[in-house]
Amino acid sequence: MNSTENDVCQVTCVHAERINEVRRDMAAEADLQALSELFKVLGDMTRVRILEALSLAELCVCDLAEILALSQSAVSHQLRLLRAAKLVKYRREGKNAYYSLDDEHVAHLFAEALDHIKEDR
Image 1 (tube, rainbow, N blue to C red):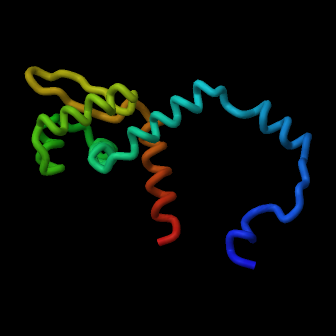
Image 2 (image 1 turned 180 degrees about the vertical axis):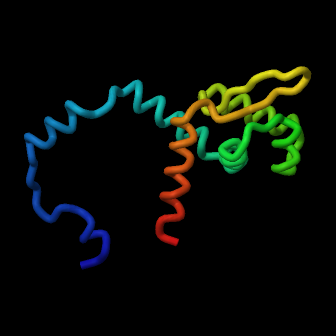
């Protein structure tokens, strides 16, 4: 028996009550689609690096560009995508735009995901 044969049921046994409970409790299709889009946004290393930096401090675009060794234009483009996904927010102070994580949910999501990655190291 090869390894792919071990990771599937060897007999068909449908648990109707459990299936009905799970179907009832699953999130709405629109919510799952939005979650899928969120994970797509998180699938870019530059955006993840921006989120990590912002998890440590509020930063202006100039500082983020310097930290990431990228142009301000490249950082601004990524920040627009992160803002559209409601992962970051900004405030203006004079001629500078300061960015931070949108809320505690984003900080928690980022921290939990990072903990998960480090779990088996």
